[in-house]
Image (cartoon, rainbow, N blue to C red; front, side, top):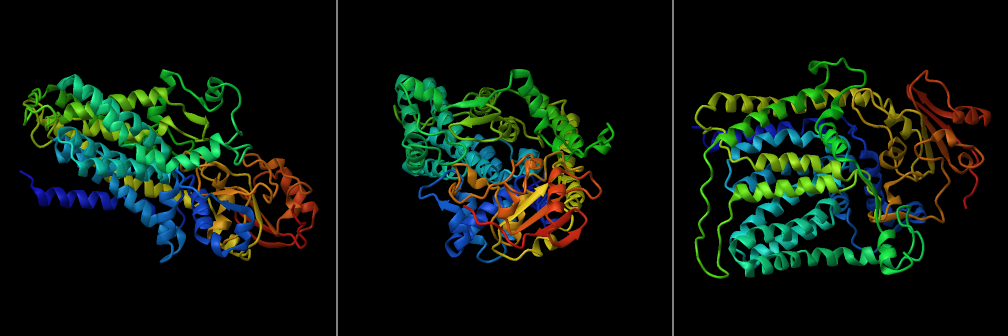
Length: 556
């Protein structure tokens, strides 16, 4: 029988190997990386930069995205921001299987199930660059592990740990924090009702109170933006609600919802499918994302069928029969109910949230959480399978092991190819001095090697790699520690339609203008306008052309 040394050797090897894509390229080719790094750069340099102080306003409140940005900023005192981000991101990715292992232990399930979680270190949330959300997932899993122990034997120490984890989640990402605030009292009702009316009433109240410190952390921010705000502070805040109480509530929420079938299809799109190259032949060997998804789903299906055929778990027996004493909570029941409730949340939540907070991508971020919970809910010991299922459990384990081994290899391969599409981004932007106002126009959005709009955030990279002002930023939403000063914000074309650029309305206010696109691609409207200005070219190579504006017009 394989023991501790075998388990930990394989666990450490696979999880560390899973970090290869993070460090394989100098520039991390994930969708939101540029925007997150630019905001971290503002946080890191704002106090020492008059240019940043002119264009960005510090939010004097604790905000939902604070923790990831602040930790990277602290690490950046010892290394460049890009490296600091990779260090913190690596810790978040490593924490995913570790936190799943903690939940498996709390549920009394086999630790060997944790290997089925390893491929999810590199899933769609990682490709999209949802750094803050990636940090919140391990916190959520540790919260569940502490909660099941708390239900069994509530102590002040465990209550403090739960409140602390909820507070950490509140300042990391509000999606899973909001889910947790509703989930813990609901689970308390489900398990409390099995042990009498008093527990059924008291437990949900008690568990809801654990979230009060985290609510208190964000309350000043929420009130300042959404209740007492007289006008729009950022692009996702629409001013103070008016009318009756019910009318005000209606003004506080709107979102884009999918139907049930679209939500089911979305689950498959949010596994590993973003690694599928554009125009790849329709067979598995040419579609890395589809191959990984097939291996993982096949392995999990075999394990799930085996778990269904395993002998039923004996009902738990209360260790102490006191009115408020410790009780037994079946780990399989707890994780199963959690999986069911988060699945319900997935179908109820919108795809995109518009009010009260703008959040692109809501329910599809939960796909990774659902997959990890599905693993943790399996009442199966892969090394001790049910009678007659040994071969199929072994085959399922092989599929999952292959997925864990291939995920870093295939992801790194696609990342190396995608990095070439950025061209000579470093020398191009290095040709511009520091602390300038720079507008980068891009005609290229989609990658050929990663199924995502990988180049949405290319305009922010000057601020990251060199340092200065760019007009596009994640600082335009209210959940960030800095927001754009609308009074000094330079005019710029619509972020997703740069052909709306005009020299008179936009270009003349910038020190430098960059153009990013495929060599030989048809010229856009802005190419013709820039050519008409006879601007000196300071850099031209592959995808990049950098123009200098000798006499930028003042703004405002």
